[in-house]
Length: 418
Image (cartoon, rainbow, N blue to C red; front, side, top):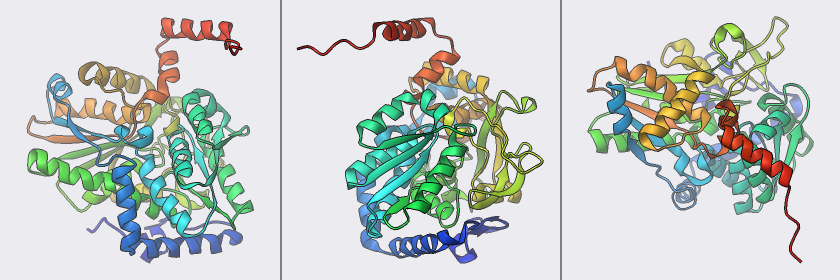
């Protein structure tokens, strides 16, 4: 079966998933975006500029690193790490943001708005907005702003307005809603810069296309390193952009297993998790059809993950389709397993992954010892862990760090020298 689909020829559908379920007033804007993207996709000048910026501004290609120490300790598959965190802004998010910024400029937009959870998409958007001269507003749940303060600080320093969302769960779901509302109010001069492979068509396919640079690079890099394709790809899945970017160039390679790792939170029995394939229901929310964690009335349930970027009730429509087709295996790991994986990777390889990426590492730690030493596993490290220092220190109850924060609060900021 051909798993690489062009959703543009199916009106944005992946089987029964996806689509464009939005108020009538948004249809013209989405159709204009679709046409602009299709023209840009076939425009060599646009593609050349996109690739040039990925190389010279973002620092691509990102390395594919053989984790020899971790592989030896686990005693199974040879584990390679795709280090997306070494690119500009510290995560894969910038790939898509550069592409959409070029598209917004092509459409004559002067302003961009975006949603963010972990802050990485917001940081990438603010960074690229500064580069292109866009006015920029980032919507972020109040809870996420508190737990991702470093990214909030840098977004503001880059000139973006970071607007807290104070209702609902005060996390990513609510930030998405506010960004869409703002776009509706400012359609003429504003581009909604969606950060994941979801929302109404054409966003899921467009974001996937921009992120597929990850998988294309991995194909070339693993062939150079090992002379063959990997046996298994592993990536975390929130909305699903880093994972679909890794998976898509391999979908028609039957020999390559693919594993998407959702956030198991406090464990599936607790109900406090973000694993959409564990009790999720088919629904239409935020403009697209997919699986969502909802109650019997169709309202989104409270979700949880130690990783803010995975704390979301829905999953991208292409992932839902790949799940139902059986092409990708979706599993989940708990907060506890994630923190343990973070610690092990730091101690064995000296690499500090983001908490989101640590979910993929945790799954690799489970799987690798069960496979032969001749097997090759590629794990996507979608971001680096700088942003998570407050969350990790609190989760680990690091006394020295907590004492340091308490002292800083008591000391306050020194008066300016006169």
